[in-house]
Image 1 (cartoon, rainbow, N blue to C red):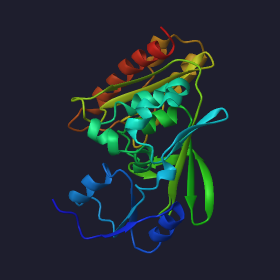
Image 2 (spheres, helix red, strand yellow):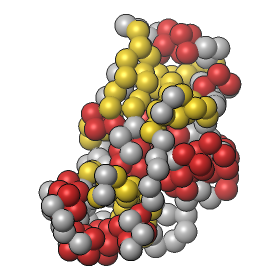
Image 3 (cartoon, rainbow, N blue to C red):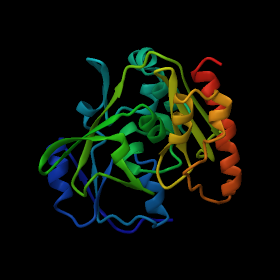
Image 4 (tube, helix red, strand yellow):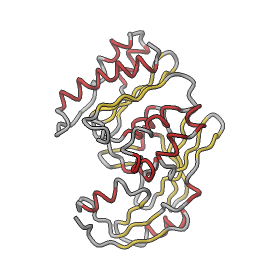
Amino acid sequence: MIPAPFEYELATSVENAIELLGQSEDAKLLAGGHSLLPLMRLRFARPGALVDIGRLAELRYVREDGDRIAIGALARHHDLERDPILAQHCGIVSYAAGLVGDPQVRHRGTIGGSAAHGDPASDLPTVLLCVDAEFVVRGPEGERTVAAADFFTGVFETALGPRDVLIEIRVPKLTGGFAYEKFNRRAQDWATVGIAAVASNGGAKVALTSMGATPLRASAVEQALAGGASPADAAEKADEGTDPPSDTNGSADFRRHLARVLTRRALGQALGG
């Protein structure tokens, strides 16, 4: 299908993008375009204008920043998958980036676009929630930092305002094991269910994909591990507090079962079991 009419603006800087977002009703940012453009072709999204930030090279980087790693919002999945800094210090991000879509998507799609889109079936938002990432946002009133736990607010909804630009994502340097397990019907499909796990203080942090309106932390699993439960027993609590959808990829009950199975696998890998 053909998108509804819209204006196109090419931003020359982050500040220029913020200005352009304020000049048109319902303007949207365009980065890689792999999420927004299909919605526009189906006319599920009808922005009045697209503000293209895809050529802002200053937002495409990975660098060490003390005990954290700073990732520019326009860093592409392909680059994250192969980045030596991420591979050494936060391997779950580079690993999950290599699972996104197909090579064409990974060469154009960006981590910032994936996070800002707020799709609960997306892999990287779950991973970023699992590692307690921080999101650096710049808007008309200046710059602020949003914790991952506060960033994802609903289906395709985030803490970003209409004139906000996500400029950087900060992830911690990890020292323990990690895993990202997902089930999908075909290699390029969205995750029917995905599980991110990273070892932490003798236990693990665990987050869930496609088990609710946003990426979710598996709090019951984390608490069980902290209380001395075995990974297998803790995994049985993976679906507690979730609200998985029923769709063509699987029923809610099927997703609950998958969450328990995949969490057991992810914990075994992350904790070395």
